[in-house]
Image (cartoon, rainbow, N blue to C red; front, side, top):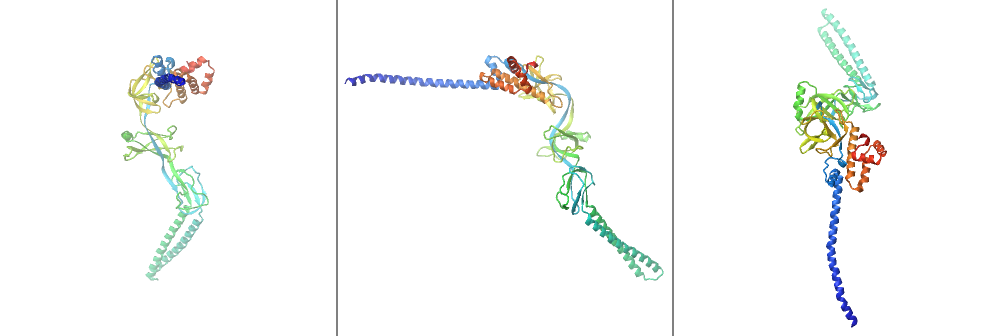
Length: 490
């Protein structure tokens, strides 16, 4: 009884303990939920800040310090840019297309008589002239036919000569009334019959000689000989599909291409005024100039499916740079804009307000200028309207982070010219601009990414710049990363 009483007295105590633990568990569960939610929010905010630093390091850095640094580099540094000056110059107004070279004439050289190919007198790919002997067939059988025809003609000619002599005798005798007139008429008919036979024999002889001449295969037109289609010792037939060789007349060469029908009035006006319309042929990539020619004719109808008109141009092609069926890029020069206000194509940007450029002011800040571009000639484009003047400086490279009023530093000038920009200088300017962006990212990014960003900056340098970078002090290296160019260029 004592033990039972003791257990009974301890039971309410254990019950109260379990109640307190149960209540504590109810309180801990919402507390843990709040902690997990807080951790998730903190992680999301950190990822958002990291993304912002990676995509727009300048703006994130400015937000963190409470200042606005639009278009600036690290610590308010200037954005490195390449510039060019607005200028007046003559630009060609052109139309670009893709065309195909065609031969003015093409001839498949067939043999006209069957025979064994004895000799070939041309080299593959050489220029041949009309009438030039290209090959020789075995002529012996044709020589025999000519000899046979000559013998037949000689025999019949002798018979004719004898019949004419007899006719002369009969005419003398008929005047003396020594022979009947019927005999004279018979002799006269025999002479005329033999004259017909001799004429027939002469035709047979001429045909035999012509057949023999066909054993000498001649070029029907002047042009470029292709690859031979048969070899020595083979029997050539007039029915051979490819003949002996194919000749293409490529001097001049013809080029066929299509341009928009909207240009037709301008083209027709030039042709009617007998003004030349130059046509320049480039390789398929549009880089290497192949030849210069002129418009020869235009088609007689517009293609309704494409709203274009076909044009045929001729090229002298004396250097044989153009080949039939060659695909080329075409530039048709329609007119020349004299002393036109122009800017590099690389300087023109497009936004909601239309086309614009960044103008560099005297205090090294930039201002947008809305323009209306016109015709393009290579790397330059005419300006139809806009607040620009010759000699003003505009940005051609490094515009990715510029805004109105941004500070810039010119690292390359004269990037472009009329014949094309200097690719090496342009690449160096772009590398410097990218290096400055990498330096800005290093400054505003998280501390754990600093080494990776410094490595990325180093990888963007040229081999010569890397050696120069290694020889600098830590302060100079830092200045290079922050400014985007080596200290020697400061």
